[in-house]
Image (cartoon, rainbow, N blue to C red; front, top):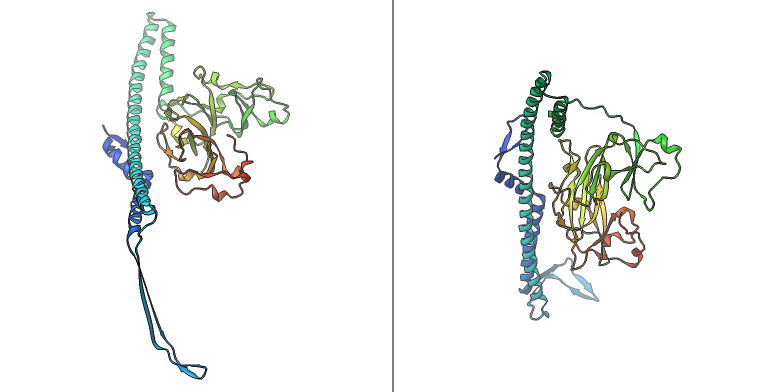
Length: 429
């Protein structure tokens, strides 16, 4: 089956699964980085092998001076003075340094080769996932359209039967309700409904640890007192935004729930707020881990796992043409989540490990993944029983020597935290 891709001013291009794989492999930055790392490992091995070879060094010197030099009554002539030398150095015994270097370089090349193989398989897996996801959505839309046609026919038949006294109003209402559900599932551009004008005005959104949300206009905040909260609850997020944006709620069940703020009633400081898990119909025992407010789905979600990996997912991966409030597989369920971070733009993060190490990583160094439940890429090198302890913006820390912790390539181990930096606040956001 072909995967249609729209090209400007051209006929739709039909791509097979194999062609999708080829294009993904050809344009994968991660795979190119893995190839470069393998080539570098190969050069390092050659350098290590050459350490036991003889080292030749040569030198030559020529001098010709005019006029003659008068030295204490004697005349010194230097016309045609030449010197040449050559040396040969052959390592005989270095205490195992050369042989250890060779073995280390060989292991490094093997690791780079395996990393390239794993990266290639990940790219193929993501391409296959995207291919079949598209096919599944396309077939679902076609099936829904056929179902809509069937329900339209049934509606008209029941309407005719009602006029003839052979059906009841309840029969017609049940069919109309089902037709509305089908229209809700169809893409907005195909549903035929006009876009609703959403009231747009500034609001401040407060979100609490227990999952309560308050959307408060400015005029209600000016005369407000202390927030009314459930006992033991606290506000963990405050966002100044507008009424016509969307809110995404990521949960501990690897799911994300979406709602437009205009669908939530305005509140007051003196009110406890809207209980989001109940309003959005979350599963029993499901908890919200993070709230993201967006108007255009720009930016990235970064999911840091305890194993040292990080999945960088563009936020637009959660945008859908279908009017869906709940998305499954919002992030990987095969790894233990350590930290979830939303970034509107690229920045630098400070990652601390349980081994007392820290590294400063530019998020641009982490390759983005198209698949939401991707396991990501290795960012931090950890030993057994070690894990990522915290992730915070680097700009929030006042480090004595930030260059000590900054890394150029990934994955990296990081540097031991010095005493003068221990006092910095490194708790989770």
